[in-house]
Amino acid sequence: NAGVTQTPKFQVLKTGQSMTLQCAQDMNHEYMSWYRQDPGMGLRLIHYSVGAGITDQGEVPNGYNVSRSTTEDFPLRLLSAAPSQTSVYFCASSYRHSASYNEQFFGPGTRLTVL
Amino acid sequence: AQSVTQLDSHVSVSEGTPVLLRCNYSSSYSPSLFWYVQHPNKGLQLLLKYTSAAPLVKGINGFEAEFKKSETSFHLTKPSAHMSDAAEYFCVVRYSSASKIIFGSGTRLSIRP
Image (cartoon, rainbow over all chains, first blue to last red; front, side, top):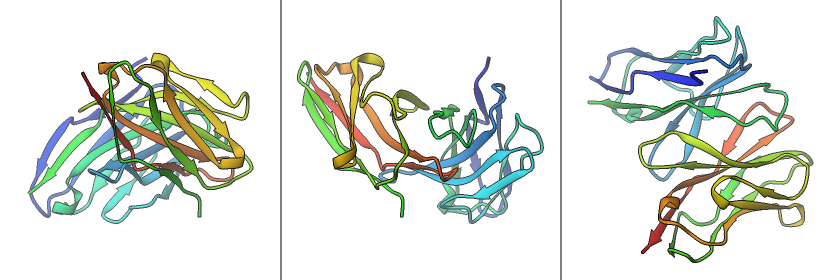
């Protein structure tokens, strides 16, 4: 199993550009989520999904869109990039959202810089 | 509101001495608790988890944590620090009533030679 994969690993954008961060998992996990990590703030939840066709907002959803058309894929779209979105983005998945004991598996991260 | 607090943003210990990283969570009758480690420029790796079984949980690399319901705490310990333990550590809580998973702000562990 490849686990959770993310592409790209690094990205530089100009203000106002849009892009999609890709996330895929091959473990048949129901639950997938996106976090951003900023210095001194830990990980903050952007959006999450409890299954194909179901998404919901996390703590910091503004400026981001998600969709979940398949169990495997959970892309994150930046609609109009802003310097405040400079961050490291992590995708994570876990087996069943209703079972709180399931740990999350994390991708390697995408380091995004917005100029 | 549901929350998790890591009481120290930075902990520094000498190699070979004990490590204590503190974590408190807001009360719930059925939380699951996790500790993750993040080495520089890497993703997060699960160290250990508590899921309503024995309160003392053993994880990888000699770490363990004890769930204390009366204190709403889940502190991470290791008897003897190694240089390779230098990393960021996150305490995470997941409640059965919600799909959201809550991260602490992290504790950076430094190891002095």
